[in-house]
Length: 143
Figure 1 (cartoon, rainbow, N blue to C red):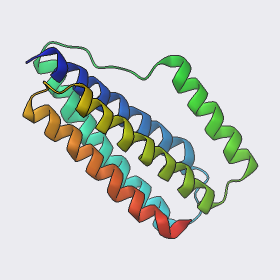
Figure 2: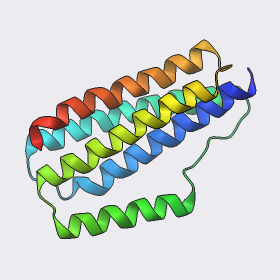
Figure 3: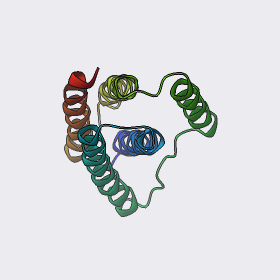
Figure 4: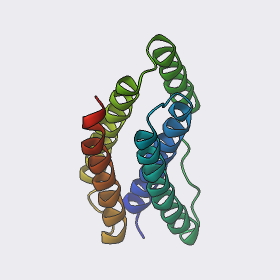
C-alpha cells in the first residue's frame, strides 16, 4: 500500500459521498417514477463502491475523506437554490448529469495524478467512472 493508493481511495470515497448526498437532496423533487427508480439504482451503486472503498481504507488503517465542509455546504445551497427556481425533472436530470461529468473528470484527474496507486485501487476508481458514465447516458432522455 502506497500513499498514492490511499489518496485515490480517499477521493473515490469523497466522490461517492458527494453523489449520494446529491441523490438524497433531489429525490424529494422528482416526479417521474422511472427517474426516481434510476436515481435509487445508482445511489445503491455509489453506496456499494463507497462501502468497498471504506473497507479498503479500514484494512489499511486509514480514515476516509469527507468532502470539505465549505464545499459540501456550497453544493447543498447551490442545489437548493436551483431546485427552488426550477424543480422539474429535466432540470434535476441536468443537475445530476453535471455532477456525473464533474465526477468523471475529477476521478480521471486523480487516477493520472496518483499514478503509483495500486491496481486494485485504480480498478475501484475506474468502476466508479463507469457508473458515472452509465448514469450520465441514462439521464439524457430526461433532459
